[in-house]
Image (cartoon, rainbow, N blue to C red; front, side, top):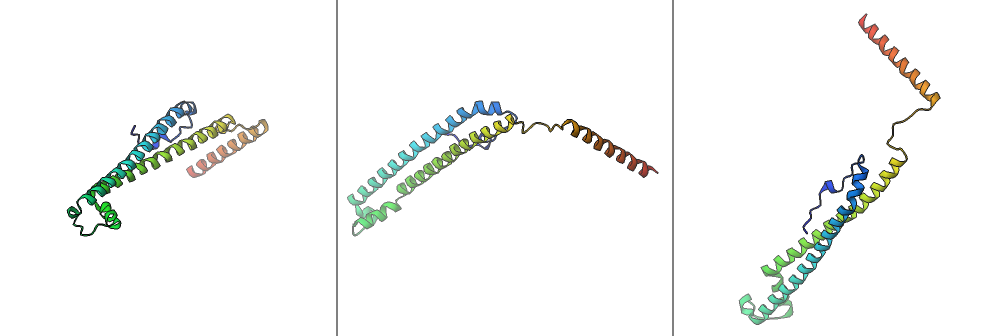
Amino acid sequence: MKLEPKDSDFQIDRYKLDDEWVGQPNLYRRYAEALADAKRDYEESKNQLSVTRAEVELAVRKDPSEYDLDKVTEGVIKAVVETVEAVIDAEAVVVDARHRVNMLEAAVGSLDHRKRALTDLVSLHISDYYSKPVAREGDREATDEIGKKQARRSQRRRKDDDD
């Protein structure tokens, strides 16, 4: 499965925590499966690189003149193997496969952090962190009085500006 990490998969809508929690297990599973596939692809690419190197090494030993070699030593053979286009291409496939594994490991790690963030957001919600502040009875009267004074001041300023 070729899954490309998207920013939207890691974002949380704090106003829809129930939906976020419902989707979290499937999201995690998709990325974990993609990571397993990427690890398999990485191992297969490493195996293919080994086969390609071995084939080139055998070809060099079999017909050194095809590679413009006068003297065949282990060091020369290894040097020739590393310069053959098929080996270079196979190495690039391994590097790309390893990068894919790293990216998906980062995504799965991010989903672990996402789970923790969801847990913390639910805790904040339960403790009424996002609720509107409510003044106590005595404070409510003081707040109302402050509001009235501000309204009167504003009316006086408008009246002074009109004169």
